[in-house]
Length: 606
Image (cartoon, rainbow, N blue to C red):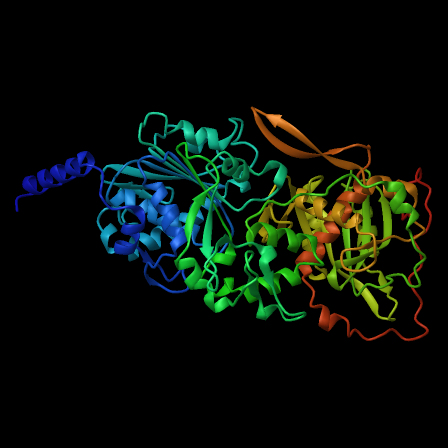
């Protein structure tokens, strides 16, 4: 065939695709006919087999009467694959510009590499439609995929530039509760993304997320504005329809693996083996009138995945009861419900009144950590010991005075980190991990960390914002001409402070409880409770922010650093509890010596 004829045929085919009538297949039908699961991102690779609740969500996306689709979902329900199928459907049958918004640019890049590229490779119908990822013609980049009649754009919600000069008929928002408060200086990312669709009468706006904090959950707010659909299933015994609720999950005492469901109508006992049959007969029902906005709530109890078996979920529930952070994760990512925070500012006087006389330096702990805050004229260092369930004892609080751009004060810190503490069981405990805030005099912190890496001394950087993990995987930072990089841990300070405030309100010793020695003075307790959460608005968007109510908040910052040090260390408690005891005549370390604050360097207990 002559080259001009081939080019003409390609043009005709593209025109036909662009102006062809809407396809007759729904998204669920297309998925069953064409979609493939890739081995990199699926436990079972091969042809797509949908779960009934997935069909309802997918068909709402291609329903011509539906403009918005909101999915408030847990993990383990297959939402990512629904997004993949949506992209495959429109690039194949109804080509148009598509905008996919992830929480960050890095998330968008990861999604492109881990989900989109394998989907293109493994889905035969998409072969030749979306540019080969190996080509270098500019049509296929990590964040931009071209196909006849459209372009797939992938952007991060933290980048204002990502939304510019883009026009899209389909916009897919993923994990919107994890979006930062604003895209640079340009405001709400959801409004920015929707604005990109204003030129299309047949636009589609799809939003999905695991809900996080109740007072500021974007996905919960969108779901409340929808027709609020829930998935109803029949009881295998009596046939009555109901939605699965966590309150209906029961199990024998101490045996969560044998979890079963109790029918809310007649108390029928439903075995996990009957779940699939229930869900296959289920249907979506709306609680509010439909006005173009379809909303879906779905949680892991409905999922067919092996890791979503009722017994596994029950075990996860039991394991989370003594850990506030784990419990929040369960509520968010398993039940698909928002977390109602109890982050009220604790009363420092109440905390001081419950101070104790320790019988040993490290009291009941088995692991000792340290956190260091850096100021211009001093280093402040808090030492804490920990037991299973993250029960915590404040062990020591030191102020090392001196110019932190000079070596003397860092030598004092090195000496302080050499201390060994004895616990109630007689075990000698060194400081196992130390976190230093690198926000001030960063280069000096990095230098100290490099010299003391073998002692598990780590540099940290606080990252404000909802939904961030308390500690992220370390990144490597190079400084100056030194070829050795520094391991830097980004810290989700808002989440860490929330966990600490929750635990400060725990009233009985045990998991999560925080103990204080009677030697600590009022100034320490005031600093530990020196912040509170305030709700603010920026460009019409509500967000929460931690604000100081007292000038000095170093004890709270250092408590965060100690929590991070423990998370990085990730101790195996069963092994640690077998530490050998110290010899009977081994003395406890001397208390921090008093120091005249006007004379320069040294230790001081606050």
